[in-house]
Image 1: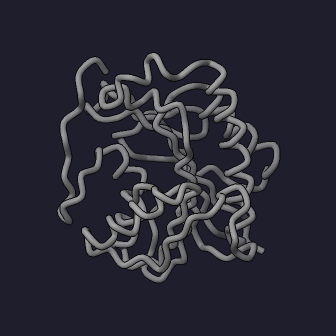
Image 2: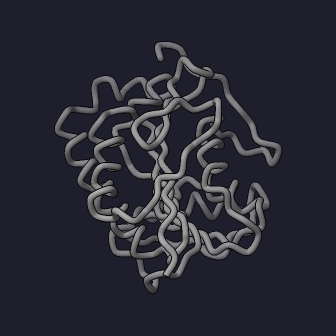
Length: 217
């Protein structure tokens, strides 16, 4: 991570690291699915998921990042069902409103040091603790938003235990009936019940993801 990863441009012109594109693929939205991207700014994953003809609602706690999502949806031609500034821990939607919910959570960003070198000096161990608490609250809200039999996807561009497998352990305790879907993709390496992409694997950002299928009814 002492050298920047290559720049990758999607067919629609949006610049996005490949590992982030792979996260959107794991969510696997189907045509007509109602999808909530809870932490959507600047919009890369939301616009990618909209290409599958899913009904995607993109939210972000920070207004300027929500505005970036709206601008990028115009630039890419992605049709989003809605873009709003909203607190992901207290989303303004009825429970069980979505078929799929993506929590691409704020994190320590230690998987993207190739592009954000300043994080080496900016991120402290205390930040990781605070972020892990926020991530836990976001995941709890996501499970309230998804319908029975739906999918919750959690991802972060970091590799700390507190922000990856520890969050999954919380889900296992609080939602024991939710099934972690195996990520059978050679680009990812197994990590707990989820999977990792390390920067040296494919010359991308570092990324963790875990996908949950909630029980029917």
